[in-house]
Image (cartoon, rainbow over all chains, first blue to last red; front, side, top):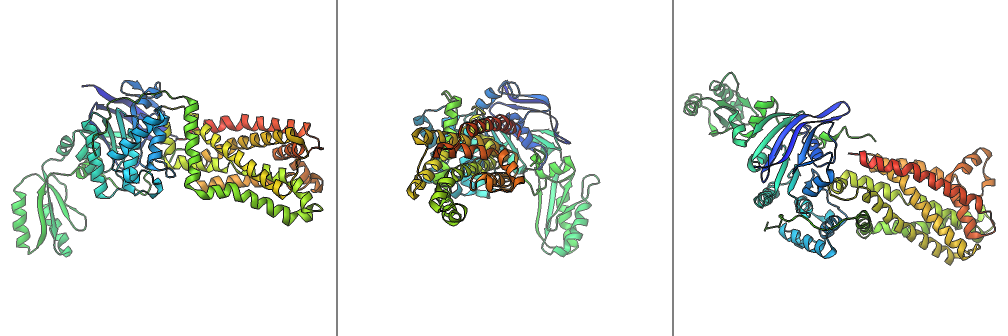
Length: 327
Length: 265
């Protein structure tokens, strides 16, 4: 199989802050490659380097065989970029946005108009085609943003946190659209801090934290990094949480303790028999549980296990970029 | 989502000029979306002209009519000095919203974004000159410098408006927020436009201020435009000074703005 996007020892410094500290990755053509990590991990910086918006401090990267530093124009011909913030023009209509990009890409007036219409139809925006984007909902903007990055029929689509801030329904819709594009042969590079998103969409994932790759593999492989399964219990009475935590801790694999989030107690277990034992112990103590289940670990837990900290939400979603330039 | 063809690469040629025209069109379409911009471009200079002429006119000159003759060239140039605020703010907003990222990820000429911005402002500048001159003529302004003088004055004024786009573009690209664009812009343009010969003759100013006013590039431009419009005043020296100032400002701020544009990430 052809490798479509390759990075080798990619480093990017912003003064004192090292946003990328030697990233290696290979994304195959026609696949969804997920770049997963918390805010400030370096995901946006990686996308910006791979889309020629930023020059790397060291290392090299190629997209479709073209070097991002030496052949930026060729790279730009192949890519479509959808940023963290919907980079569409609020003071133009949806139709005018797509028309403008078509014209910038060298389409004739007629073709630019036709391409815009085709995309508006495909993204269910025909009814709002003539409305100013400032009147669009968040979900409509994201759809238009995605449509805008597809005007030039890119072989490589970069999606930088495409569903951040979207409601669950819009998120599902966008996931569906991304799958359709991949089915049509587009290679997608996706950054996300939603582990579920990477799990659902990506064929392969690289987990980055503080500018370094800390894990790589398929979602299934990453989940294997936590041995066994997860047992979780939710007591009806929150007063029982401490007791539940104590009981579940006794089944923990290794010396790990149960994790109590204030509603739900979670523990990684080594043996399946723990479920039956847990039922008996809880019953003996007279604790009534609302929910008691055994499941495979989520990528969240994998992330916690690998990095030692949770993928937390930070106030500034552009945290990657705060060292960019001064006022 | 139904099938969207993604297989074929986009065909077509792009040129820097065409890209520039597309961006300029986009910027001018913004006026349609924000009608207050049209008010700002049209009503505001007229209001300014009316207020200045009828409020201060009698006090500064012997009559409003006489003051109109003196002040119109000043008010025109002063208005053109403020107009490129749009350049600064629009570029700043484009950076913040990620629109510039989109442009830069496209295989288009990198200078087209700034050039298109300035071309659009060129159209606004022409509009502003036409509106204010037409209105002043209605109020009784008379060209004393003949047709050639009037045309030369408009060309010079428009060239000055374009020149001012560069430092304002620089501020717009450099500043992090639109608030700081406003702060810096006003701190620079306001003293330059008032401490000039726009509203009062040089001789009426205190000696220490005269030095500043004489060195102010706006004074050269205003004197040149005034001389060309009214006739009977020395024009050669202020015109040469104005052209040199414009060349110098462009030579300094155009590369700075473009450099900043390339570097800002």
